[in-house]
Structure formats: structure tokens, C-alpha cells
Image (spheres, rainbow, N blue to C red):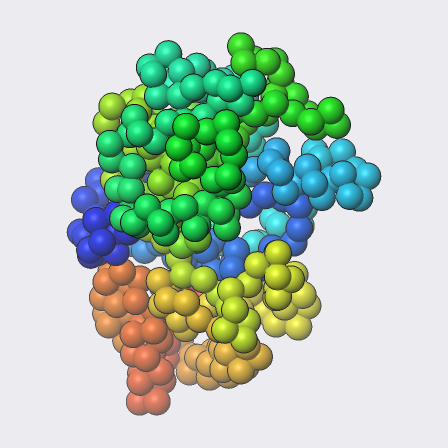
Length: 373
Ligand SMILES: [Zn+2]
């Protein structure tokens, strides 16, 4: 099976044996899951199904960021404890993902479960000369990571722009370089704090994924993924800090899912232009929503619309009516092996249906089971 590897900027053959260690960046549970989340997790679910077809057992770990600026801000604004807010939103998220027919990951560890591991890593980075401390803030020093940029390949001015946009705070004057990033920070008076050799505080954004990947999967991950907005700074920083500690390659293959837009603008919480999975599930089935997502290649950026969903609903109806059968089975298998090329797979299914073949058994390859619903 081939996938497009972000860091290598090329299609690569997956050199996988019996087991694939997969890590996908999970949610910050402070708001409901939207179609951007759904597109990411449907893609990795499809990847796992396709690997299973090749007898590869995948172990997928998906973290839960239950302590960071966003969740603490939201908890403060509604007067709730951040862990209660997290528990409530995680229950909703699980219901939405089950509604889309996704299987649970192997492990869904929470950031707050990994404070000892995080502090060990931060301590190792300090002791190894990769990090420095100013007034209780600990930063990773990117100048000590000669490969910084190996995942995103971005020029420095773009890195600075994205760091400013995505919470990297390049204007922080305590830093030696504006691209240095926070490993540990002092907590505000009403924020949770853990004791550490740097004083009471809480983790920075990126370190939890390095610590959880290491704890759950070991020092090397076969496939690490998430939305393409995580390439920089999140994944670049994860790679830099993990490799500073292990001295080896952290991730064999990076895989990223394109953004879902509404009227040409990326869906995001800050803009409020969100389509929530839970709302769609009130009127549409998981199969229909899943097919609407898969009608675009996972790497493309695309626009969610009622027309996209209506077209998927129409297809689901015609495919179910086609009856049992393996029409276009080989073409679909081949398309999925080619970087999960779902548009080509769907076109082949449509041709088979037009020619009078049943496809109900074929569409199971897309994780769409038309027998049960
Ligand atoms: Zn992550």
C-alpha cells in the first residue's frame, strides 16, 4: 500500500509488517466535534481498515488534550471544572464518532495522565542542553535541533507567521529565538498546577503527544497523522523534541488530512463557521456522512455543503438498491492501496452500479455497511 508522506514530500510504499503503530492527534474536549474532526478520524479509520485487508494489525493511539489554554479558558467562562468539561465533551465526541461507524482507538490517553512522563522528558531535554528555563517557563531551543523544518519544509518567515496564528507566541520576549516553544509553563492562580523542579506549572502544547506516543507505542511510530494544520508548529515541534531525546527517527511516515471549509473558509472554532457532526446525525445516517467525506480525496481541501451530503444520500440509496455483490471490488481495492484514493474508488462503484452489478459487499471496503442500516 502506498501513502503520501508529508515529510518526504512523496508517495511511499508502506513497509509494514504484522503490526503498525499509529498515532493521531486527538481533540481538546471543550466543544463539539465538527466536520474537520470527522474528516481526520474517518480517514484514519479507513487507513486501519485497509491495513487490516493486508493482514496488518494496527495499534492506534489518539490522545485527549484535557489541559491547555483553550479548555481552561472555556472552563473558566462557564464556571466549570476543566475535567468535568472534558468528561462531558469526550462523551459527546465518542457518541458522534460511533455514529459515523468508527471503531475506538486502541488507547485514548489523556494529557493529564502523562504529567510524570512529560516532566521526565522536559528534565531530559534540560539536562541534554536542548532546553532552557526563564522564570518557571521552560523552552525548547530550536537552534539545538539541526533538523528543525524536516516535517514541514517551511521557510523561516512562514514558520513565524504560522506560529503566531496557531498559539506559538513568537512575540514572547523570554525566548532566545521566536520559534522556541514552550515545554512547561507556570499556571495562573485558578489553573491546575503540578509540582516540578521548575516550580508549579502545567505542560506546553506539544510535549504531551511526544510523551504519550513514547509511553503507549515506544520511541518509533510507524504512521503519525492529523489535520494538515498540525504540520506546523505541532508536528515539527513533536519531532524535534522526541528526536533530541531518542537520537533516532521518531516517525516513519507522516500523513495529513486536508481542511474542510464552509464557503471557501476553513472551519474553525475561532471563526465559528462550524458544521457539527452531532447536528448532521439527527437527519442523516453515519454511512451518508462518511460517504460525503470520502467523496473527496483526504489530502484535498474541500467545501462542505448540503449538495455534498445530498449526493452522498443519493449514492447510498442506489448502492443499497444494487443488492449484494462485489462489483468493482478489485478496482476499489487498488484505488485504496493508492493513497486511499476514494474518489477513484467511488467512480468505479458508480460504473459498476450503472452496469447492473451489486456493490454492497464492495462498499464495505470504504467502511460503509449497507446491510445493517
Ligand atoms: Zn499531537
